[in-house]
Image 1 (cartoon, rainbow, N blue to C red):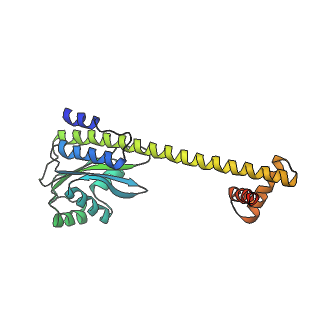
Image 2: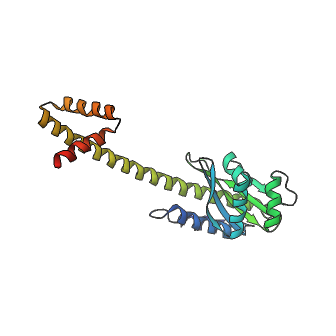
Image 3: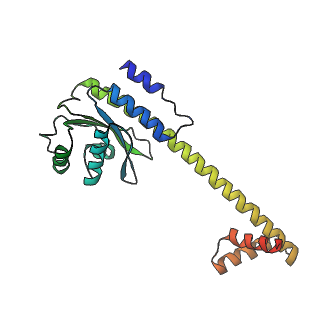
Length: 228
């Protein structure tokens, strides 16, 4: 267990894509969680599930089969925030269509789906698969799965925060550019029509409403016309 935690703590988050980080984490999971032969990470955004990273084709195939059916242990674990363990697919009754299809197309016989701690913007689960029945019955498997899920949640939260900062910077830049062109247009109107700043803005606002165009676009047209 100490080795698993040590490897997770060494995964770099800064300056890397979320896919790269999660690929490292899921590789560690497949090696370090007792019983795991393949592992994957399911994320749900706007209730759309997708595999963000995986280690082993068996995991990806089992995930995608669940997405096709619209339910399964990995999706239900992510949505419900509950740990779901399947000890033997041959006797499992909770997801009959998915299990029947899985037994026909895959060697998976047991699985462990651990929900990611709730972060507010993204939910999901860590999925572990084995060709052996009862592979995840030990407390060590569950504890290791929980530790990895915690690391995944941190990586996802870090990526979401970075994306939000990027969006905020982008929106701020757009707002500043809009403010600048509106100020230029006000200056043009003040000079041409001999009005003050408040009156010039009112002219822009009325034109925006009359022509059903954004205020910035009206202002840009005035500035461009003056340049020409």
